[in-house]
Image (cartoon, rainbow, N blue to C red):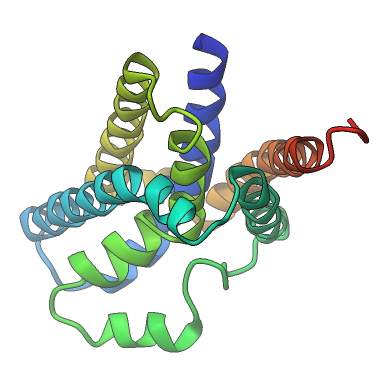
Length: 209
């Protein structure tokens, strides 16, 4: 179980990519005081937490209702995470997280805590897929479920801390530094995403495994 929790924590932290959100967060909150910026960060993380919590509860039953096996979702989730990993490695704006029109709309909003900060930057498609991949098999295992929830809470706390320190981090790292770190995380996520696909194929075709 410790291995499962550690793997989930690493994948979820890499998918949320709090460091990569910093440049966009700073641009979208330009003109706000530090107190207002931190209030926006707190509200965005709280809303993202609510989205992720609800999805962790209803994701598994929804898949069963739609007659989608967890192995099929492992394959899809692995492919989605692989696309995110490629974008991270090549330091491109993540189309799997938000599109250019959506980002432009976010710039025009006075309050960006719900959109685009909470969704899709924090609780985006990749994060939701990762939640479902972890919580689906954990149904009926309260201790594992509790451990996964703690991991989610820790990652969100890290994301909040990063957003709180966005200004000094940007001064020290800059955009180039953030891109270098994201490239390293992207390599790790790419390998883990391929493993998800392999596990899904093994579960779907046990004779092949």
